[in-house]
Image (cartoon, rainbow, N blue to C red):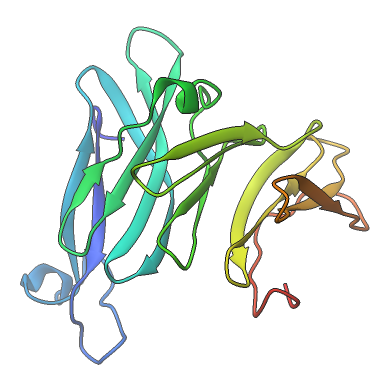
Length: 200
């Protein structure tokens, strides 16, 4: 965080198709290639941090995080959307933002360009920039990572706590409920990827 501002980086063309120059390299400093600053996220009176970025396509991406007041410890959720040419702040209705007071920690983009985002304690946000819904995964769950598997099935992974935590995984069913999948071992799930809806 830099006094309430956080840079959002995007990749321009690099030395070869599909490759990006490392930030700080000569290519990155060259202007037309490598990394460039596409936007600066800032709210007056707040320190802002972004924790996760998810892209549905070159013309639709999301970045989520938090903003904290310099005068208190209260947090507010931050959601930024990319339309292919610029980043802009998503305006969340008060009802949807009410349970997101700890900020958003992970995001996943659906194939239709929508967003699923989660707080550490399992509160979720779902929307497309126009309509938003929010809720919570049942139970005491700490979410670390999320992904979309299959067309639009969202999964959340993490643990049951800290210290003697057990890993957990849960997905949203077509009926709108959360179904948990038993996982063996101890600890938390810190990363996940999916080949298909049946291979995660």
